[in-house]
Image (cartoon, rainbow, N blue to C red; front, side, top):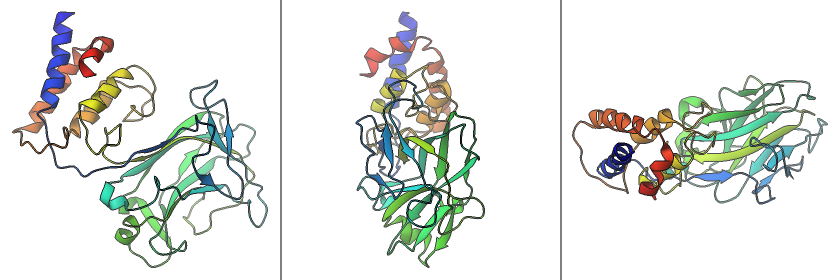
Length: 288
């Protein structure tokens, strides 16, 4: 037991020595547990459902119910204008948007979903996911990740550049849109469940303070062995050593700029120390 605690203490101590020059990031998580829809809007009236989310009973989520008719409410889509979702994505280092999706079994189709970033000047300036995330018609929750780099997005409206859009995002849109990527999306009567929407920056920055440091390591160890989507950094359904590896790879320290020789060697050594923490609960007092 003492050996494991010492190993965990060594991890935390050494993490404080590792620095980098990663940009600041903004994390915005919409889990719908407060009964609201966190500013998501649209003509199909997003609704907060009090149970049945990815964590089961009493886990709130948002439901979208389009009419499929011509005119308002026909598309499977929702947008957000809240300040936590709009602004200068380039300045905060925004790199991806993740969400949990549910395609009910009584729907008729698999659902190809995309993210749309609108800006910088009008709602006609649109960049959307080049490849959709296919939500299968199986009644199960699925974690989707939409990368925000230029190679992962396609301009479907306006003439503004990718850089200009990323510096002034006016709204974010999630919507059904089969191939090829389009300006308008598609009509549907299929119902979609949505949960745990999050804007990501540096992988591993769990508290959104612009640094990957001991506070983030503490959150990861507290969730060890669970399926917590906020700490499952590689999306494999379990918080474990693989996620710790992602966190250490992106380690910045507390906004530190300390030069550390041979960082790859340090990362390997840290991973070895993590393996010694067979009982994560024993690490937690040292990480608080």
